[in-house]
Image (cartoon, rainbow, N blue to C red; front, top):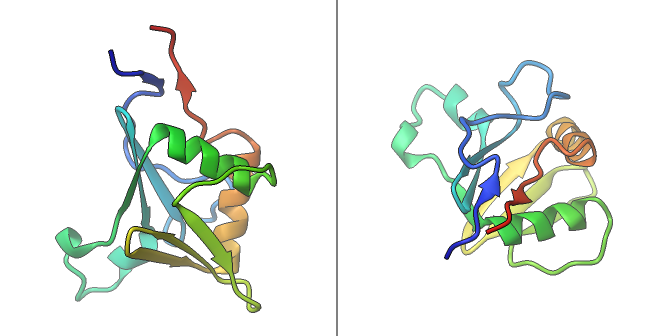
Length: 123
């Protein structure tokens, strides 16, 4: 039997620390999957929604990644690299999403507040 998580399914959401929702790390829970995208993509008139890059990971990998963001030891194929100018790039299986320093700070604050956690439900 597959593990279920709470929340099980959500719409796209961002940290409550984001300013207006137009420049942020967006996350959506869908059963075991966690989808991540960059809201800046939709601001460009020439971008087609179906072409938007999305990173998808499993719930366990997501929680390990959140541990890393919180400064705890963990390993996961989903990585984040922050450059000297403060931009952070998430990478997973050939897909990369780059966030501004402000976007990343808002996301990290939300992670620290538990806004992006998934809880495994007992079988």
